[in-house]
Length: 115
Image (cartoon, rainbow, N blue to C red; front, side, top):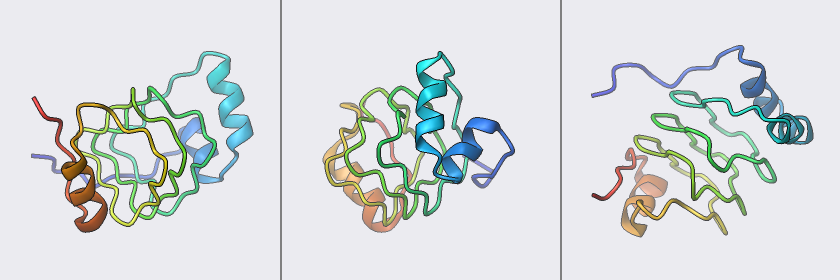
């Protein structure tokens, strides 16, 4: 069981996303930065166009986040919640069932990977 609530840190890459500085974030990703976003609070942030594929979002909250059109097929979303998020066109990891995604989007449940 997870005891900690998703948090907001001063990590530079996280702050770029919170400030919706997508171009700068993507440039730093292209230059090899691969930050962990595990356990963080992304509530209400617009992540459209962000190069987030392959990042670890485990145990994070992505509530009310705009994820439209993002490729997240190689992201770790185990334990993440996407309640109220805009998810049209999102490419989710194959390990997540449509039911798991729907339950998280509608009710805020933490997503679990099928085994």
